[in-house]
Length: 405
Image 1 (tube, rainbow, N blue to C red):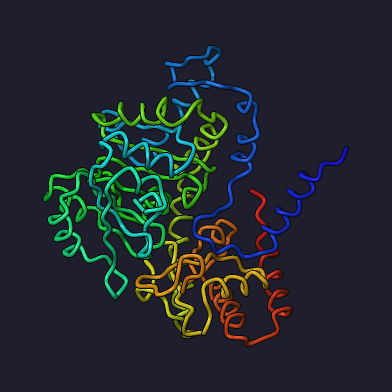
Image 2: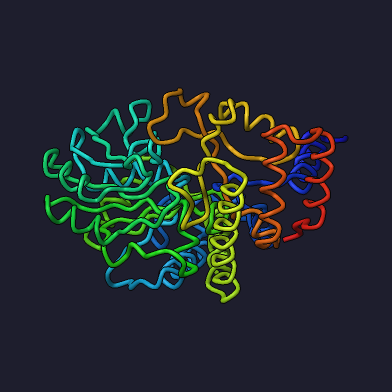
């Protein structure tokens, strides 16, 4: 019998190949990652950490989890005597909650970046479970779109948090983890870094590493790290046991072994010299795209980017983020709507769009292609040409870079 789901999967594959994906939190995984996700590990259940399972038949899967953890140490160049690693978290949200539960009591104070200025829901937003379980206060960026570390220090001294969270989902500049460590030390707080967006850039050597400074590092694995949808928690040894217990039995049941193995495959790939070239190209492409959009008159928050993403204020075009995103989707350019710092609009229809280069870089695009993409965005949002004609240009460009893993 024909499967409608299988048919829809083919349609989604076609959509991915025929569009230009500029969502900075999405990427393309290799064939080996895809194969591992669909492997026989889907059949296995193994509650507990490797070598401490409640089920039997774990000789192979214990080795797989151990190998994946060893690759975390290798890729991020950290010591297994100083750091503990957990690769079982189902998602970044679960990883962040486990980290909080591992080092905090309910109601403890946490200082983190506000969602409106580039943080994440699990950095204590009121609609998130994190904001309901702990007392969060939020720092943001200045009118220039940049973190003001002196202001954050003064805020920390007044608030006196037990934990400070550094890391963002929509901050286009380098994060100075050393300064965050100095702030945390000044108020006697632990430092947690949510590395989800820039983990691949750190692994590739094009962003500062948090490991000389942080007590806990969490990251998803599906963004710039180019792996499956999962998460990793890396913590100082003295914190690891409590965080591990927060994952299991605190928050989850059996780990998703097929995902853990696929994370391992992506870490193997990230340990190669070619991945460093990839990470460098991601940043080069983002800078080229940002510069070209600025040349076309777009309002780029903070004036540019140092990493893989940028925020564009579309209100000068008399558009909302939703309207801009829908218009771009009509021509096959995929972005996401996003709040900008000091946004006067609401999250469901904000003033900006968020654009990134991880996916197009994986497909093999370079700086000249970014110039073409900027031109296509310009023509679309400033009504310079018929949308049908632009759609054909987008499809032609995308077809030159079909990704086959």
